[in-house]
Structure formats: structure tokens, C-alpha cells
Image (tube, rainbow, N blue to C red; front, side, top):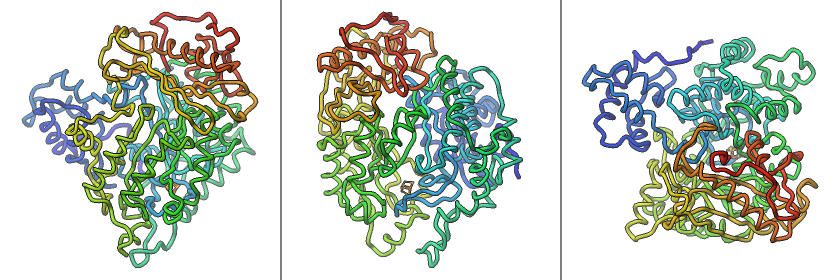
Length: 629
Ligand code: SF4
């Protein structure tokens, strides 16, 4: 089994790196967009195919080659520019993404890639996917090494939002889910304490895993074979089941032999997960958000409570279409009714809801997509908090190839997509954050469909010509500016939802730039657990500003202006006036301490504050303590 050292040997890539760096040094501004463009045009040749250089590799190459081959002498300011990743940290926390291992998915969606080297729906050429694969999809290695890379790039690591991606989370065995979450927390704790156990984990994976920690791609087929170019000889699920069968069997048996477990044994108990949570409450590297992705038909009352027990705070849910015919044609395997039910249960349980919606599916038209997008926000059953818009692209390993070949499906033209997305932007309310517009799939994987990854900018420019500006949260975020807290107004937006009423509180400037917001649910129906009886629910508190280390001051930055506390106090007033007996919060484990200091006591799955007298219990109120989660 090939063994990989921690960092890439740069020598074989010197010409490509020099070319990239020479192009970068002459740019007047090296922002994320410009850097991404350069990364796409200067790829790293490896035996497994062409890959992106990482920021870490760029910094190391610049440090080694500055002053040679036409590069100007070393300039520390340029290193800072190379390290700049503003989008990742301006929301107040550092985001860390980990992928689960390849595993069968209950969906049979015709548009979904079938790359058996990856968890379902991911492609081995995507940058995050490459990192996961290089670490054998091990949660500890992925988390620990990413934290190291962030520290090397100068990013703060005190507050981490962990996003777990891959297939359908709820379909993985529960023992695997518990292990995966626990190992992420182990890595957070080891990193915070300066302990590095990556060698121990690698050794265990090499010993016990069929593919080691760095699977040899030569031993894996890249995709299910098409017979006659159009029909699968074997499905993704069949192949993945076969190649990972031995490991799955070992996981299943682990429960019976707890004492024999190693870091590679994919099983943990609930007690171990909960112990990891408790340790994280006061750890130097805290989990301030935990996100998973799943399908609507896998959401039930039991599932939302189970996700909560794992420490989840946000769910990415693939709704894809609000048209039953389109769902059926694309073999989604669930109906719009399932989506309505899932959204209601997730909201009732306090989760932040991050929906995925796909225009241009087989059977849809720009007109029907336009109508259904509006329904997303006018129908109280939906109203997502965040949204990814992923127009369907044709990927070589997807069943959609067959429909394309038969002339039954075609990608929208540039103008059709532009006009549709412009209308989507216009219809998106202020409470929603458009996190992604266009999935960042490497152009080489796309057989047909849009290849422009900065389409958001194209839509924004198109709207700007008519004097229009998107209203969604992402378009209005403070983004690292310093602001005068006295110039902020507290704005309240109320809208009906399936569970009752939502109140979106936001601190905005005169131009509607948002410096912080809070999502308050005022539920009217049956609670999903007796713990939430009589409770209004804070689903999210978010204060913008550059992510700062805990305890570090940042004069003028929104995060230290007491905005989080002020938002919570206003939410308490609203909930009291509406007659609720208590205010609950779906806190991440790393934010429990923050809420305790604001008068919340620990419950079973939530934290609570009584509202009887409407007064805030004693707690730290000064701006320096207000590290909003
Ligand atoms: S449910 Fe998601 S991951 Fe599974 S096949 Fe469908 S799109 Fe792919």
C-alpha cells in the first residue's frame, strides 16, 4: 500500500508552481476569485490525475522559490496575500469540511455522479474530496490535518463549524456515525492540546483497512461500467458494497468487542460521544456548529432527536425540486410531501435548515423552475434559512447521460440560466443566505452544462445594470469591514412557517449591510420532545466580523460589540410578549458555555432560560465577553 508523507514533494511540480506564482505576483489584487482562477489554470500533475495546488503548497513554493526563475525577492506581504481566504472566515467562525467514506445511498437520482472512489454525489477531482481520499476518509486525520493547514495559513482555530458531507448521513450505520463524530472531536481536542496522534491513526489504518489511509486508485474502478455506453453493468451501491464489505462487517462486529478497538475501528458508543461533547465545552478548539446532509424521507421525529444527540445544529437537506413529476422522473425516491414533513420536523427541533435546490432537472423548464423557486419562500412549509442552487450539469458517470443521448434532456443555455438565476436572486428574502450558486465541479468532469463557476458574480453584475442588488444574507454581510456599532439598527422580519411564526432579527446599517442576526421560532404545534413544551426557540445567533481567537480583542469589529447579547435579549422580550414560558436554544457543544453565561441552563438536548419575569438572569454583559457562537 503506498504510504504518503504529510506534505507533497514540490520539486516535480516546480515549473507549474513557478508559472502560477509568476502570474499571481503581477496581479493588482489577489483575492479568492483571482487565486481560484489561477489554481484552475495551473494544475498539479499526479499519477492519480490533475489536481489543484493547496494554499499550503503555494506558500511553501513561494518561500522556496522567491528570487528565482523570474520571481521577485521574498516579500512577507505577498505570503499574507497568498494565505488570504476571506470567504472562509468572515462569518465569525472557521469552517472545516470532512467527508464520510464511500457508502451505498438509498437514492437512485439520475443526475448524481457515480464515482465509487467517493461518497455518493462527490467527484474525486473536487479539492475537498481529494483531501478526504488522501486520508482514507478518516475523520481524525481529515480534521487534524485541516486544522494544521488553517494554522499554517494564519486562520484562527478557536471556533470551528464542522460540516460532514457525503451521500446520505442518516443511511450510514449508527455506530459509524457516532465514531465519525467522536473522532472529529478527538482531533479538535488533540490539536488544541498540541498532541499529534496522526501517525498512530495512519498505522492502524494501514494495518486494518483494506485500502490503508491512502487508497490506491489503481485498485478501484473510477465509475460503474456502462454497457453500450449507456446502461450500468453494476450500480454504485453494488460496487461500493462489494469493495467495502469487509470493513462494514468489522464495524458491525465492533460492538461486541469494544476492548479490542483501534483508531481504525468504526464504532463508538453514545457515552463516548457525550464525553467528547463535555470535553469540548471548555476546549481551546471548540465546535460551534455541526452540520450533516441527508434526504427528506430520512427525517422523522426519532431522527431529529438522534441528530441532536450527536450534537448537530444544522441539516443540509436535498429537496432538489418542488414538483412531484420532476422528482419521479429523476428517480429521487421521495415526494414533495416528504420534503414538507422534513422541513417542519427540522424547524420544530430547532435546526438551521440548509436546502439544496436543482434547476434544470430532467422534466423541468426555466418557467417551471422559476415558479417553484418562488414557492420555496411563499409556501410556509419551506422557507429555508440557507440555500444552495445547483443547476444540473451532466457528469459522465451519471445515468442522465442516457437521457441526454436520447435528446430528452439538455442543459439550459447561458441566457436561460442567467435570467432564471436573476429571478431567483430577486425572489430570495433577506432571511435566507444563498451559500452557493453553481456547484464548483471541475470543468473536466462536466460533459454538458454550465462550466462557469463564478456565475453568482455574472448574475450580480446583470442585476446591477438595472440598479438591482440581491437581498439575501450573503450579499449583505459585513465581510471584514470595521463598523460603528452605534450606526446599526435592529430590524425585525416576521414570516409564517409550518410550525408557527419565525422572527428574523438583524442588525443592519443604513444600506442594509448585516452585522449580526438571530433566528427565533415561535412554535404553535406539538413539540417534538417534552423538553420543548412551552418554549420559543433560538435556532441561530450569528455575528459577523473576522473570526477572532477566544479572549482576543478586536476593536470596532462587530463580534465584540455586544451584538449577540443584544439579539438574545430582544428574542427573550419577543418570546415573553408572545406568552412563552421559556426560551430554548439549539446550542452547539462548543457554545454551551456562552449560553450559560447568558442565563441558559443545560437541558437534555437543548439549553433553556425561563421567561417568567421577562428579566435576564445575571450574566456577563460587557462587550469583551460577547463572543457570539
Ligand atoms: S440522494 Fe443524494 S447522494 Fe443519493 S443518489 Fe440522490 S443525489 Fe445522490
